[in-house]
Image (tube, rainbow, N blue to C red; front, side):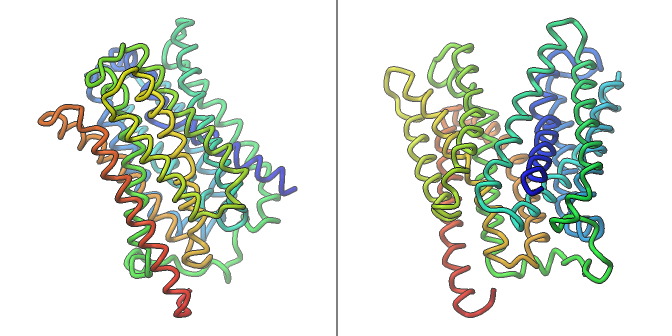
Length: 396
């Protein structure tokens, strides 16, 4: 029963990855923008709306899951996500696509926060690492679906339609599985157990929460910046051929996914703190490899893949440690706030590098990654000392 339920949770996270805006929209946009009357750069408006929705729903996730439970929240979230993506498949104007980005972002943030909290509270670290591995599966599959639709001359609309149908099927499966969720604490809570959602100001007053937010912000800033600017750095700074750079940049995603798969086998033995520390060491090593002005280019290309491996277990380890660090009674509200911090970092920092590069050149890329990786290291170690001090004082 437990095995079946975790498989269903992973299926829901595949649905979340399938609908990842940057992955699905990015693969369709070169063709799509011409047909809906948008400029090439207008994709940024859509992703900004999506990001705003995820931040808002993450902050509201405590209130939602207290009322509905993790199972119902996830099922409804996947259904809304599927509906939004189906809506995009019928759109023929830019403003309609932007309109559908609102429920798309709201649903994504809700699913992300609900499932992260549920797995953190009910399963060990290995399951959390594998959860995020399956998000990577979905994020990798959706461009292939879109690529097939375009190659077969079915159009980008068919790609969106196919993804939406897959998500509707997943939503139906999750709705049918709600009795399993109830047996594992994920059903609709009784009225006397729902409690009152913790206000944001109260969450921020908890010792160590702000440090965790900064650590998460820094990590997601580094990850998203790598995703967006890796190819440009390799081409314009290192002089690597575009096709070679693009191929190795895509391996960053494979590095994350494979790292999370492998991390699941060792996370329970090593523990969340040491997983984060080891990941940061790998990330710092990879940044040096990326920046080294040496031949052959394989050094910097390999550094990009290794950076993905280093990134792999930071996100799941921070989330999984939250109930232990702050108490299960607080984790639901805190994880929602952490999701908001994560989306803020991944939304705002990559464009910031773009603006900086106008003056410094794209060669600033590894320095930018180093700044946020160092911030992650400082905040995570500061958090560890703060949490230990609080536990010694009997605060948690």
